[in-house]
Length: 159
Image (cartoon, rainbow, N blue to C red):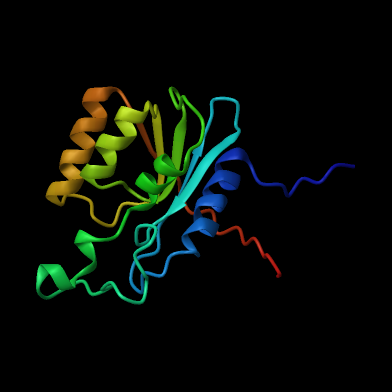
């Protein structure tokens, strides 16, 4: 008799995004992304963090204060990192699983990369200007949006 407690594709790929988020050094918001082909093959993953060569210990993680002393000018978001980490030549029709709904800047990059669907877990910035702009662009570009409900299924990984 086969195992009936396996992960479906959505759970599996969101699980990869959640695991990727565990690499983030951000003390407040850890985000992961997993880009998947139309054949359910993982094309790339990413998480939010400082650019290559910019030390996690030297750059700020603060959310408030002088703009140059907050993380916002420095951190690369998970979705952008997943796009930049891709070593192939074509993402047309791919979908992205992300733990947090993309900002307007990542939205532009995802659309330009050819992403056809965004599956996200959290939409905690819903109705902020960035979120409204992102949803407007996704709608205009014909990108499907789908929030994946939290199932409560636990997956234990022991290292």
